[in-house]
Image 1 (tube, rainbow, N blue to C red):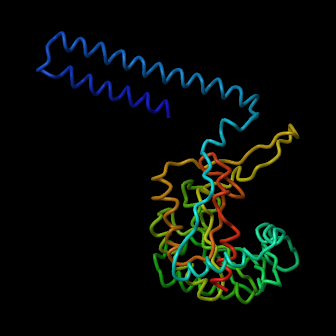
Image 2 (image 1 turned 30 degrees about the horizontal axis):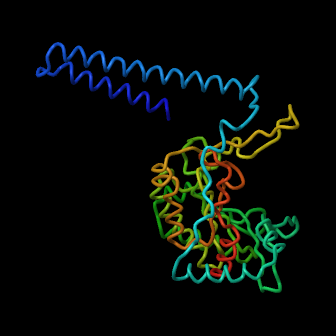
Image 3 (image 1 turned 45 degrees about the vertical axis):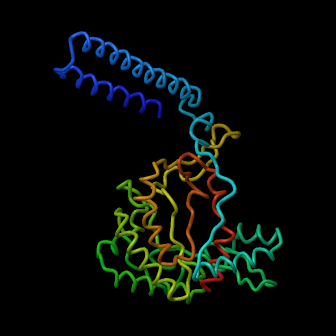
Length: 332
């Protein structure tokens, strides 16, 4: 930011100097004085840029030694957390689901809360993810399964057209029909949540390995077709999970991993950094359309994989427990 500010100062100084130099209303002495003042301003700005670059270079040399990142302080934790998370509110079906979720959460024990948010592994039931049932509260549990183009790792199901092909059709009716057929197969296989549609990655990187799952790198058409997909899936009695929120634009370095050259160090994930306008006008846009269509859940990618704006602590802002139980109450 300091470098940018300094460069902007240099630019403004030069523009101002050119205006003063060409002004016929100013005398020779005035022009000379302005010239000197602007030159000094430019020198100071340039010095600020240079000092900032030198400071960053020195810090980078401390952080990276022989190509190995020694600490992540320079890269992470730059976004201040906001506590507590804002209270959710709403009306209509969402308001009913939210109040029902709060009522059931209030009756849960600490152990039950931990279990419902952590889930469990079961390699025999065909679910990609499992949330345990709570019999005493008549909570049936949940079976999560991929993916956006059909049921994964199951027999007697279809492999439907990839999202990018659906996007190329520009056809809302076909999109809904495809989603309805997919939702029906998820329902018959016993899945509670279908992990789709996929609108992130949006497609910033043309060679991104998961771009094919989404509809388009245009946020408008992506959002329109995501909304049709949400309706198609949920009209069959299955919860749609719109994913991956937000900024999931690459698979490379998406997980923290151990540094095998040093057992005491962990190499952190990549970070998607962007300004607020970019976030809202591009990457969040299709998610908003999915929410307006009534998507029962959102897969928050940056809680489990990458981080956004160099801040891995943002997951504290998401009430997964409320979301899961609200979706279950409203949609099942």
